Image 1: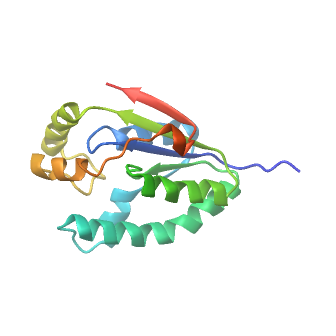
Image 2: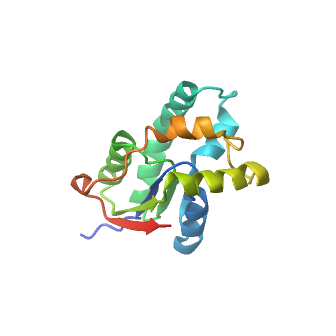
Length: 165
């Protein structure tokens, strides 16, 4: 018997690289269910003022989302994750989802350098697009968050599409 599974699409890229924009575009193209971390944070978290608080709330959200995402993939529908996917630990969590669902996956790597991301961040801070939890991020905060960024490596063995500047 052939399993009819949806595909799990997820994105890796620095802050302001364009992950949310790409996630929304993919959700439309793939007729997929979009899970946006920023939306969940804005609805559930009672104010986040530190990176540690963000990590705490992100773990809570993922503990609820994980089983739901696996069920959706098993039902045959595809899922787009608008989550950072920016460290090997985060990508291992995503792997647990598509492997748990026995579903295919695709990682989209936005290989955008820091200076371009800072330019995009300035625009984002001005326009404050809907659905972004962190809509006013300073350059210092960007630099602090960016130091944790780990680009996907070949040994992680993901099906991957790379986007550059």
